[in-house]
Length: 543
Image 1 (cartoon, rainbow, N blue to C red):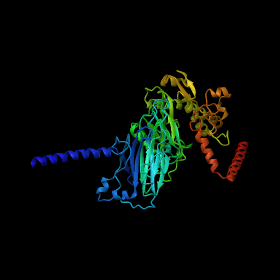
Image 2: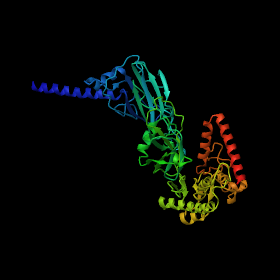
Image 3: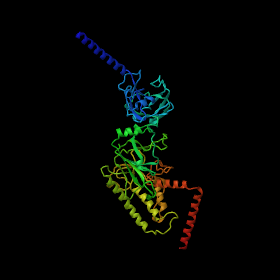
Image 4: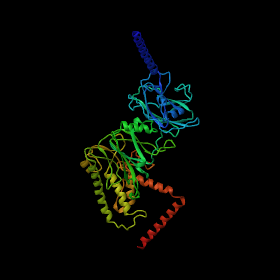
């Protein structure tokens, strides 16, 4: 009898093993649809193969159950199994797919048929084509939506609505109690790497926002490892954040803050971002200060895209009117970015110098060089009577200020890049011989000073000082550049950039002041100037 009992138990044990393996086989042949928790972000990864995909389900009733403090079976069935797709390499998704969900919110939510659910999908990373010189990147992810319980796995051939994740972001809404979402890769071949993305669902608000870009940002310059920006508006640095990524990796992802965060944390974590104050950007330094943003430890000769964003979410969720900052670090190492000069305080750009020299040595050399020329000029100016009227609108102080800007631009040459336009300075051919003997920069490209600096000095100083600008165009273009029609110091009539040394600020401020004056006040100011001129002339005649 005992023998038969042991035999029955053995058969039962074998039967259970067979059933267990059978169940495992059935489960592994079924795909898994990920339950989206409310007001949480789910991370996902898709391989680069065409039509790799993963499916999600949002069930408002189910969400209410999973948020129940009692837990129970609602937690066990947090992922609903659906049918008919190939065996999964991941325990939760389709081929070459992985997801991870953050814990569900603890606060219970109420749902009804009329509740609007906000969905967002944002691309954090995309694969590339390594066989092309420019690293052609993958197309946008596709999102397919179904509100039909009989179609729990929407795709290119069966969907209620479809969306492209344009520029790395898409937002849509639904009032259905159960919504099925499929995220698909487009049809493409030859790519390396994965798509990474985030998906969020919430009855309260969108879980992702298009970045709200800070306007009025000027790229001051770069060298081979550093970029320097200036924000031309009053703002506290605690209200903003800065992100930077290689342009190749965030191409067509400018609406995805996740893409910049992903690149910066995974491939550019060594970069150092710092904020400081400067008076650059003001005609008169006492008027206030601006924020500068310095990003160090970048790679030479590399194109980057930077975002300076408000920390406050973009609740309107519309693309910003401002643009990202596009820049390229210089290829050569003999151009060094300097700032903080005590005399030439408007200098914030790369200068030719031996890469072995400390930055402090470079700063001191150029600052003292310009100061020595200025002191010689100021001696000549001091011999003139400060009370003599040689202009109705300018005096000796204006002359000295204009000369200072000019001499700083001329004695502190601004470096261009090897693939840019400018004046080629071969070895020992700098404007000032002291640069070659002390800084030993070698060959470099110079961005010439803007001719406006010279013109402004001739207009501000007495003719007795004999300060003059090049008289003909050929000589002018060999030493200076011209600002463009928008006074942006770029692409002037000679096709070169030029170094404005603040002369573009003067024109911009004059334009702003002119625009804010009502029409009749402009005539009043003109009349006052005429009366003042007549009075000065008559006073000089009486003397």
